[in-house]
Length: 234
Ligand code: APR
Image (cartoon, rainbow, N blue to C red; front, side, top):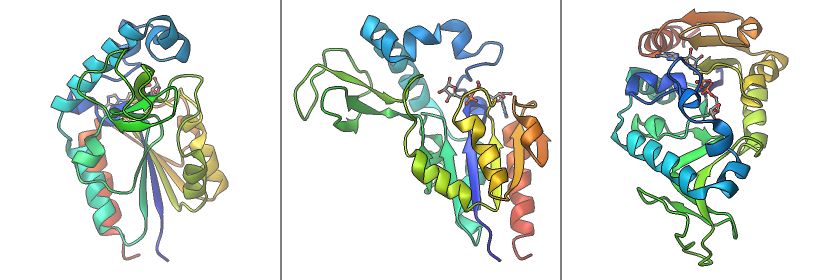
C-alpha cells in the first residue's frame, strides 16, 4: 500500500541556514515585541516599523541557502512512491530553493506582497514601504503577504484534508506553541497516521507523537529520509 506523508515544518528547519527562530534564546520575539510587528494592530499603529522588520527579514532570507534538511525533504518528494506534502509555517523560500514542489505556505511568504484594500497579491520588491501603491487598485495599502497573529492561516481546508489522508505525519523544527499548526498532530492521530517529531528538543506537544528524533535538522532529517526510502518497498 503506497503511503502518503504530510510534513509540517517550522523555523527550526531553517535555523542552520542562518535564519533566526522565534522562541529560542536569541529568537526574533526576544528582540521585537510580536504585538508590534506581527499583528494587524501593530501594522495599523506603525506600518513603517513593520515594513522595516519584514524588509530586514526579506533581505536575510534572500541571502540564505537551503540546508541538508530542506534538500532531504525535496529528495523524499522526488523518490517516495506516494504523495509527500510539505506544509510550512516558514515565510522563507528555502523549501522551494531546495527543489520542493508540493508545498503550502500556511503563514504566507516574505517574497509576496498583499494589498489590504483589494486583496491583490504580487511578488514583493526587496524593500516595501507603507506608501507603495497597489499595482492593481493604486491604494497605498500594501503589506507583506504574511499571516499575523489573529489572522487565519492560508489553505486550512486543503491542509486538513491532506492530514486526513496521511499515513505518516512529521513535524520538523517547530516548538508546538502556535495553533492551528500545533494541533495538526492531533488531526493526524485521529486519521490513524504514524506521527513523528524531529526537533532540536522536545516541543510543547511532544507527548502526542508516536516517535521522536532529537538533534539538529541537518543531521536527523537526512537520516530519517534515508530510512524511509530504504523501507519504501515494504
Ligand atoms: N534543528 C532542529 N530544530 C531546531 C533547530 C535545529 N537546528 N534550531 C531550533 N530548533 C527548534 C527549536 O527547538 C524550537 O522547538 O525549532 C523550534 C523553533 O520554534 P519557534 O521559534 O517557536 O518557531 P515555530 O515553531 O516555527 O513558530 C511557529 O510562530 O511566531 C509565529 O508565525 C510564526 O511561523 C511561526 C510560528
